[in-house]
Image: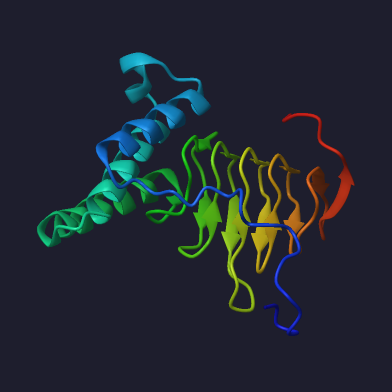
Length: 194
């Protein structure tokens, strides 16, 4: 429900990846998808500080999602390492908020609220905030490009395949396409990512 009591977003949440890393197979799937999204291959992927952060993030997710209390406790310790590593790179990305294929394009400020959800194969640039407004958080669909400086707040669903333009402020849901401006508006159908 929105703050005015109207029904939540008209765009369906069903395609958003809500899977989390629960098994070693999931871990491998997420890590491979993250590396593919960043265009990294083989052992050289560990030369990228953003990939090293994502590697730690995915391992912390696996440990924290365990049914074993001892392993979950280790996951809590690893999540602190993730937080520390992320703060050096400018990332505030909580566990279990992003789907496989996350691409963090550059170092720099990326803030995601712990209750927000980001789907599979999303590319996020610097100075992006995905945050809460009026007690609600955004849901980002699959295959979404979020340009530098974009802000997404509140009860918003970004449809699959959307492109959020640089410095856009998104406070309501739109159909798939290019979304840009402050406040954001639907510009046109997006044929592909920039």
